[in-house]
Length: 270
Length: 203
Image (cartoon, rainbow over all chains, first blue to last red; front, side):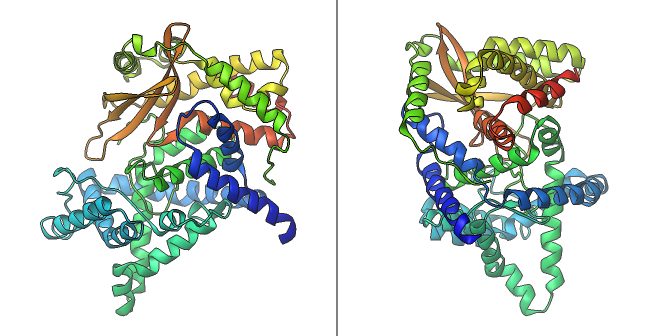
């Protein structure tokens, strides 16, 4: 098994590296060859059958648990309160985002994150109010998965995690690392308040899910192969994040951090 | 599924040649103001996509917008990717027809939920034979979303060849999805055509 997989993984690595290196959007001429290879890279999926099974499982969980909870969340909490929760959660991510900005040698992004955290924590009542955005310091997310990519680690293949959704070996390692390094999680751990960590992750997930219910439903309804569409969206989005091209990206994973606006389709609802 | 790399240079060479020919468009997209072109599209889309317009009318109007503003055939060819060359002319034509209808239905439905947040064009920049028009959707209480429109010249008229929403390409996403379907059908596009027929038959 591993012997047969290795060439495919190696190819995926090379093509993924090519994708990240050459997939400048809209380039014409000889980069059309790179575009063709990019398609190969986007679709390369050594564990596709298992991934599809887990994806189907996730769909069931989503339909039966996550979406109902997210919809109830929307009903129970009015929009301003949900915004407050969202602001608070995002602010908590500040230290980890800052650390990754630094590790990627991005001084402007690091400064933005630092200022955001400072302003919102002190003047924003511990992060409940987002004063930084109206002041012109836009939010961007960053994580260890992107850092590892910037440092040259290949994606390692496409992976669908139970409940958490699309990922890759590299991004999963990043998620785990960020979780351990997060100061709020560390503090909760030191005081043996592990449920706080779980509650935070859960609320984050529901907050996230509540912001993209219609978007993802749209994509699913109009997809011929929803699994393949999500795979492509996820990889393109990661590639754009790694290029630091966009600081505001749609989150196609039902759960799991990152930024909020469900921007993928043309559904401009709240 | 194992990744397959094209092993011989010849298909890639033909592919590149076909694409170069396709993209050897006369310069002159700039002759018509690309910003105005996209702004017009936005204005018309907002008019069409308001909640007061009934769905069948919205779909019909959207088909027109698609035809007038988008290079649907070019996009369709790109989306089929390397399977375009292996398809028969009848299959190609049917694919283009189905694809156009599929896009019209998929996106007119999505835009029907448009809650009236306008977008504004913020600039443009050349990119080889294309011009990229950047616009932003200003969301209430959030970061603006960047939408890039890739405009090409089609026989003197500007047409949209791709749309990037926050760094993700509509064309690439569609191609990846269809390529996955075709791959899993063993390289035949019949399965894809069937699925498109079923999907679009609902309307």
